[in-house]
Length: 456
Image: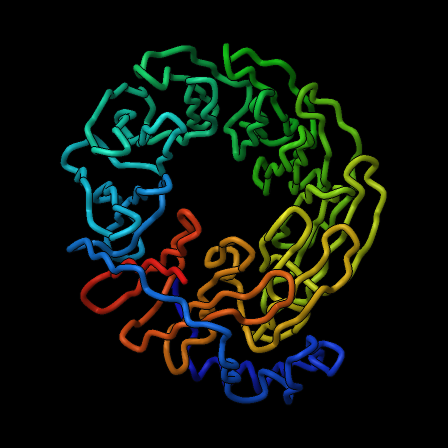
């Protein structure tokens, strides 16, 4: 991830000041400040407590780390090579208490290029590659089985349920027995390629397909995970002169699936019953928006939120009643630089037309601002550098690199900074994920990538 230079920050700060950060924008207990972004980034207030480093780990020759899965005592990581072109060079298991390496499997021990893996509830690590699918014991790293996929590239794992692992590549699907790797079924869908999936636990696997040719319909499918049978297929949009566009699916675990379709023929949200494929409602979205993000809340009044606008754009979010599609609220408090922090709250970059953005929390069911924290600045990398740990939002704010890369935790209820650690020895700091409520971050130097575990 590239970091903006200090000079570019000064330029943006001079051109686009944060005119919207007034007294009403500052949370209780936080001192008012001059317009944030009109000069140097403000210094963080002293946190309530400093997080303690649990341990550090270094894989010699590794460039970054990726959390595959974890148990209360162990975390499994993919080690990536340095540079922008990501290739996986090893799979390692670490003791979560001590950070000691328990086992490693290097890339010369598997065939092909590896894709993202998972850990299963039965204690297996499943790693698909361009040549095969491998299963390892999560505790020891011992290879238990391998199975050929027959695809041109590494498939993606799209479901793991009832002892079956479902993998997808373009418009093809296959399911393997989790314990043995035996092939359970295969399926080819009548579309060009599947661009996104939503797995309904206890129900179908839902996918949205990109047409093979211009002028064809955009289809959503419901797949029986036990047999591979197509349970339903529904037209959710169309194309005219191009089969390109943005197609995505989002869900909230209740069986509701929302398709986002932006093609040259359709720009709309479509709310589907995941069990039957029935369209409950549709809502048009702007066709000239380059990118929008969909969130589904899971509270007492489930809401479908469509948010647009990044760091240098006017933000806008619209909340729709999940059952009827009626518009519930609209505001400009938050946009695409956000995450769904719990069942109802969005946390991310606030309503500022500038490169510098204050951290805000918005109630996704009412659209109301809960708090704003102008001392915690975020940018367009926030969704990829933030995660939840207990009741805290933990993230690595790339705009806080002066004087040093920083990781911090903000209380979800109040917006207060609970703790913050700066690391002048690193060129960059990136949050890799949270395992057993321990934030894991990579510190980058010119020579190595250091994995750090934090715990109070």
